[in-house]
Image (cartoon, rainbow, N blue to C red; front, side, top):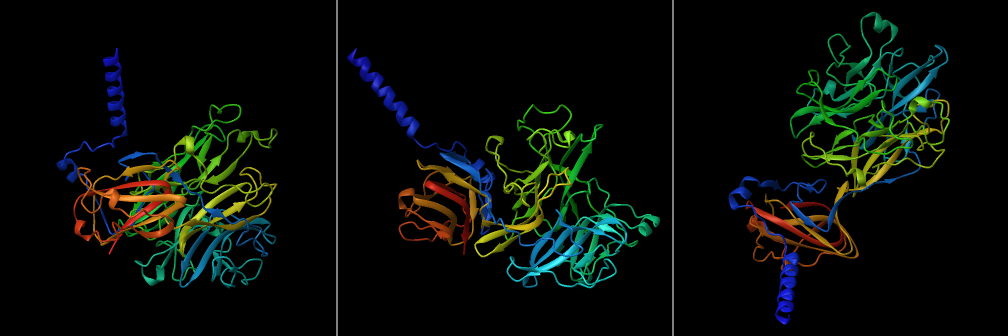
Length: 522
């Protein structure tokens, strides 16, 4: 019996040791070499599973920006009844520039109309609406309306971007849903998605020989389709809304598509890349013919300053029981919209939190405010110091109810630079090891956020997961604090250049820490 007890104790000890031992790589050197990720000196965001080849006690977490509750711009002019959904903000020519979507009512013509107006700012917070003197409204050109070129037409805002590859006369480009005037209809111009060009972002003209170039490649026009020149692929890229209609009035499904072009005029047919998640339970159960959630605008953009890094900020449209309008049961008719987040390195494959962890990236605000009904994130993210700023439209009404509104405006949200997603280790700690990488540069920097008691260490390993001399975990000086570019040292030295170009792995061990990005720098 005594011998049996000793054997049982030995067995339990053996099992405990096995459990406590770190997992070792099972891949061969040849396999490792064929899977090397070349990170060079480019910043690598930890916004998906790519660099978490093996992990324990850590979790990818989406981080939300701070949403300033006060609007930076509201409708306060004669031609501005309401600020609408589809706007663009960029930092250009040494200032912040905004092209905003507004709806108005023309008393002379007794009809609603929708314009693109212009504003600018020195600080991105206080905005002015300069007199453009271009488009007539109510008998006067004393306004800041810049499009549509025809005063009798209408357009739903648009996406503007600066194209430095284009001739000076087409330096700025615009995509929009266009409603032609009666005269244009007589010439055969139909409503739909149109492209415009401008030398200065103010004076716009239709793109195309007949001044009526209409996009016809599979996307739905009633949204803010986003397009831009992508240096990573040397093409124009567009994230567009896709839509399928069914036999019932609200029987539809909307998702995100991708189009590309070499010349901005001839586009590939849209390719399906991202759908809404249907796993959300709703009161009374899901209607048999109606999707619970749709994606209203695609919100596809590049992360500024980082190659091969893309985000989607799609507007998530919750509309079960929308056919019950007007609302008769509190909570049964949301028709509300907020903004989600997804991330990608190739524009086709996307990461987002699992349904169990799904939360909005931009949330609705307090009831009975301009942020209480629908919000729409607009292009483009702007790096300002240590932050990324996002501008978004807020409409204080539901999608189906135009009779009740608590105002509208354009708002600002602020996120830590690189802070979309982080690898988080909680109080008890955790770790992860990257796939095999190779790099250039002399030192390693991290964007990290640790609590008062949080810490982090980095070990550099061979492709076969063996710690390298001088870069073992115990050699790493313990890193603490909150820093956007913290240099890692091993026994006081930050030099890693002797490992440059060689296949290695990084092992991160941390406690009470958020890790956003890493970068080898020269």
